Image 1 (tube, one colour):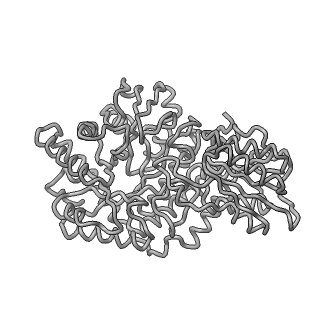
Image 2: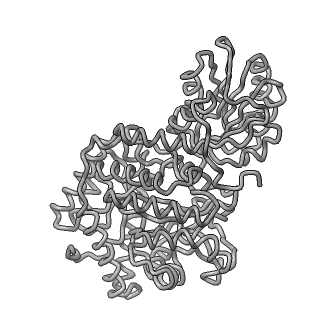
Image 3: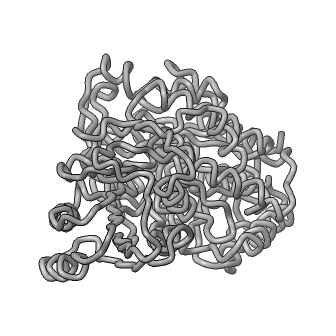
Length: 524
């Protein structure tokens, strides 16, 4: 066990910064104050795996030079739509794709591969897995980040992912406790209310978290949503509620690890000068670490505010010391883990696993037209249509992915034309595409959350009326089938990652029979 630095308040902070190497203000903080660690974000910090390894080594060197315990260095490497470590790492399809395979051993292998790559880069905490159930198809911030909408499936696969990740020496974080799948608004912008009674929560929302605790998950991330069944009020989020963080998470659920907030810059948490009130309340509620974004003024204000709260005895000293002990125990665990060589990142074994997950997750929901497997004349013309990838939520890195549908199809058929449309196509776009696509022999039409984007659904339904043989593909959430009633050949990939679209093309041309099974109710 490391000994605690005299400055106990600093341990409560997970900071962030903008830069490919730690800037002077960050090095100064490490030299003068204790610190929990850092969260790395793709747009702020990531160029390539070698640069990340160099940066994390520089941070740990600064910590050693200051005489404090090694740092926790965390990121969101969920897979699928949220991959904080980008090009050069293996881009697995994500939780809902794993849900479609229903295979705990595959999930364990994927968790371990992600962990090995993070550890090789010097990242020792992963904010994963998501254990919320996507029971609300219109949840704006969850979707394919969930394993599905079945408690037993999410519990089994979540535990397997945790075991795999931590076997690689990277601490897992179960989130978003105690379950926000029913949210109707995005907590990045406002506070959701999970209004179910305790009986429903025990049956649906809580089982994945219980399984994660039993599997030894080392961190728990709080959810910024009201849950009146536990708190008796809709006035504030679970993050600041002692009845959730201490009485329920530690008392009833038996969690003994480190509790960390979700990001403190979200609209569900008070912003501006009043934010310190929520931070003090979270610490008093039993939260160990505060996940800060990269604003230096906010970081300094919260640090000063917590120090003042401690000196005014708003934060009990014994309570603070027990929290720091948990943080130091976590630091000791991650520090004891070996660091793999950098060439582990994106290695051939992991690329093969990426392809295996992609193939095993492809789900065929309908082929009443009998189009599959495709048998086309050499000169037949295929139109590959998909929306331009954009970030649909702040927890999204889809905009970094280049459209790959046409390239995937060209591996099997030479005559493929690409049509990339805006995510919300207007009347002029729809009319122009109707005219241009009428003479093609086959349309492969990808949608991205068309169930929540009526313009996309309108385009798809217009094209389905052309009379051209058409394969529709839900490339993100599988709920798009509900808004495409006339489609006769429909598949789900749960991902726009290149490996998933390569797998889709291989399935369409008969290289394998899709075996994925829907992990959610897709037509409601």
